[in-house]
Amino acid sequence: MNELHSKTAPSAALSAEQVAEYLAAHPDFFTEHTWLLEKLYVPHQRGTTVSLVERQTSLLRERNQKLHGHLSELIEIARHNDIQFDKTKRMVLALLEAQTLDDIAIAIEESLCQDFYGDDARLILFSEQPLNVNNLRMLSRADCSLVQPLIETSLPSCGQLSEAMTRFLFPDKAARVQSAAVVPLVKGETLGLLAIGSFDPDYFQSSQGTLFLSYVGEVLSRVLMHRLQHPED
Image (tube, rainbow, N blue to C red; front, side):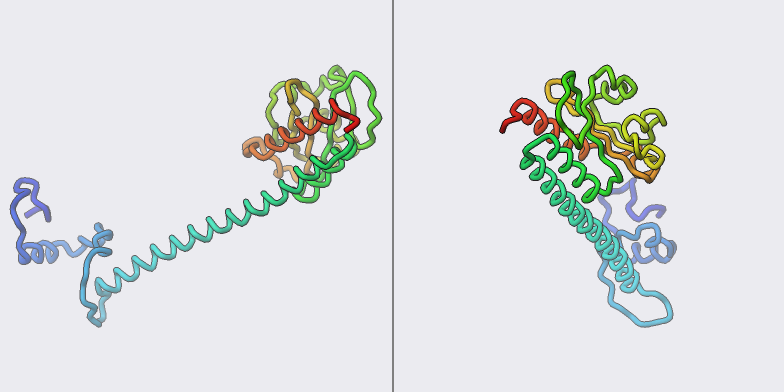
């Protein structure tokens, strides 16, 4: 008999003796079919060799350790998400409570630099008319031709920028900013740019996800549009 379950006679019943003979002739059978050990019931007998019960216990212990590891990872992810949610909620509420464009710039800088560990945050708005603001830059689109590629994507860009772009976005900290995230602010039209800089060259990478940055951009764009349309509110 070459197989435990003969393919030539699938209906033939195997006797206990045949099974025992096969296992005796193939002592490594359970090494190749360890999943069967979880289904077997074998009385435990003490001896110098490892019994099937001990092997079953070992397999179940290994599986339990793996499941415990996966559970710990899920709990850690859930804890991280809760913290991120609380930080994001604080940022959104601060933006909604902002009374002026200056307040918006301060709220976004405090959130991104304190809660989300950015080293610098800059808000640039496009305007052909001068506005009285202190904590953000008002520039015409023509003055922003250097960062036009970042504007045209309409999507967040992450990674290491060119030296010229870094100087434009972070003029007084260009020598220290080593990586950045740039988020176009779009609400019907492009309103401006949000730039977040880090002194760590690996903090922002081109391969990282941008879901959070996109969310920040959408919220900020709506708040800015409302404030620009209703400066007296």
